[in-house]
Image (tube, rainbow, N blue to C red):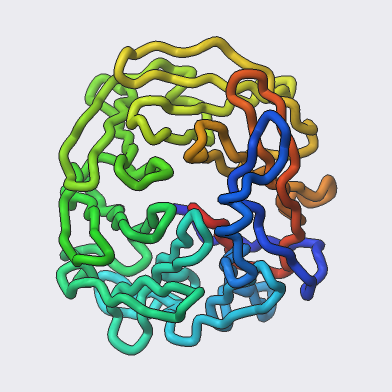
Length: 343
């Protein structure tokens, strides 16, 4: 879960944004026909929450906003901002969980009027209310003590609790049917495969090693390995549709970016491939495409403050490390937090 932080960004507060490009042919950088057809100006560019200050005290304020690909700023008026703690008090120094699907078309949040977890389709405005059992918080857990993750198409949602003793299992929820599955309590959710059929989680073992496991959409564990250090200690990572190939982006001490693909089934690490991106950028998110290439989100950071001012989205060829720019955009200033599609 991203901890609350003040992001004093230098980008303009208002800007015209274009549609986030869909998956591309990584070797050519050309957007595929299917990606173009599925793109929409109403898709979410990023979700954000404003930061305010009073007498040098900073805090989140206002409503949750969605900046859309067509430049429109959509306000989530029914989304709760301030979480209730496990003792029922409102915490105005924090914020409730929110997540955006990878396709930018769905957003999950706690509804303000009743505290129910919901998933909204921003292209149709249809809201699906999840079962009460999903919205009901376990004993000792507040609204700020969890994180949610949506699958790329918004059809699945995970609820990952941060309870003190790792005793509360994470939930895997089918948004359309309301069916709920459980994932072991000490596992941290890392993300879905592009097709939503596989969920990658990690946990620290009793021997202080890192174990990656994969679950199917019915909550069955299908794969598990104690992974090598080069996989465990680098990020971002991404799970492919085969439920086994884990892409890992490595940033060396010199700032060089390298990609390795770890085969979870065979417990083998592929050769390192140099990734051709500017050193001034920082890796933010990595995702496999349905065509077997990768998509990489990189942030542009201010040299003076170290804070993010913009995002570049690139296709990435896992075989050669070649990249091509798919999209770039600025990030608003004075934000408390912000979330990209897939976060």
